[in-house]
Every structure is written in C-alpha cells, then in structure tokens.
Image (cartoon, rainbow, N blue to C red; front, side, top):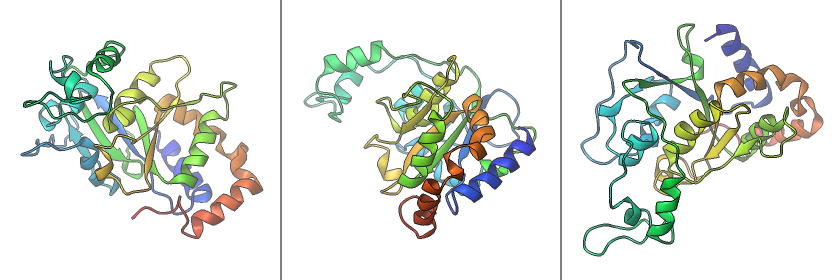
Length: 257
C-alpha cells in the first residue's frame, strides 16, 4: 500500500466528507500477517458483526476456521457446495426440519439463483481486514468498504460513475451481507471495468449495523482511480457544498456512532 495514497485520500475524505467514518479494507493472501486468526463463535454469528471491531480500528484476520455461518463459508470461498436444504432455507422452509427465511418465493428460484453463482475459491488464503488509517506500506488491500449514510453514499455513488459513460457504474446484486462487501467486489475486481457494489440489504445482516447505514465496496483498482479524480469532480461544486452542510449539521451522512 502506497502511504502517499493512504494519506492523500484521508485528507480528501476529511475535506469533502467531514466527520464521516473512514472505510475499512481487506486483503486476501496467504502471507504471514502476524495476527492470530479469529476463533469461531460458539453459536452462529454473522461476519458483518465481526467487522464492527475493524470499523473501530482493530485489525481482524479471518480464515476458514473463523466462520460459523455457511453463507460466509461459501461467499468467502472456503466451501463450494451448498447444503441440500439450502433451497428450502432461503425460501419456503421444509416442515419439521428447515426454517425458511422467505427471501425467495420458491425452492426452484433458489436453484436457479445458485446455478448462476460464481464461486471464488480462497484456497489456503485468509482475509485481513484493516481500517484505512491503519494500513501500512506492507499491506495490499483488494477491496475498500464504506459503511455510510445517505449523503455520503450519494457522493460515493457519483464518484463511482464519474469516469464511466455507463450509467451502471454501481451494481446492487441480491445476496448476503458478506457477499455485498466481500464476494461481489472481488468478482468485480476481476472484470475489465470494475464497478462499485452497493449493499447491506440482507435482513439477516441488518442487526449488525445501525438503522441508517448501508455499504459501498470498491475494488482497489477502481478506488485508486477515484482518489485521483476527486478534486476535479463535483465535490468542488456548490451542489456538494450544500450536501456537506447537511453532513456537518448532523443530518444523515454524518459521523456514525
């Protein structure tokens, strides 16, 4: 990680998004991080809840032994095969054996959704999560993740579309909370024109974030380009100046508790 990029972004973020929460990042690698791998919780736990500590500045290392959620095991690339009852779990349920989340109307729709998925194997690599201001020259983040309110999301969304003629510079795929900040941004990063990913609409993950927070995750290749264009973008206009006044005044978009 280039410390100059890290510091330059922090200066621009503080200027144009006053008091807004810094993003977190993750790197997928098999190098020695010098950080103990997180142990799995005793019961089911959403990965998004674990990231609360990263948002407060504490680094976190996740591997296959850290996850108690089968969805996270799939979307982080450690277990490819879905449970035979997954089709019922995500839809109608199975009387007497499987509770249905009713996120899809029928098991058949879940089957089609699963068949269209792209599995990204992690192998023996692990995920290192850090807050942006704690990155060092030795770090090499793959994805930058913002937990943000409406006004900040407005700015991030517009930045994501700033250099593209395509109106779909941001994508919002259906999936778990962890898929929207880990799996899909990694997948976008493999494309020719990576897009940002808007997310955290999963009802199962919503208890892990404040009521008015969503996420936007950027593949690093896209994010570094955005930092280079921030000063020539709409952020320097009076239109954004009025949004900054809302942020400073504590309206949605300001500092997260």
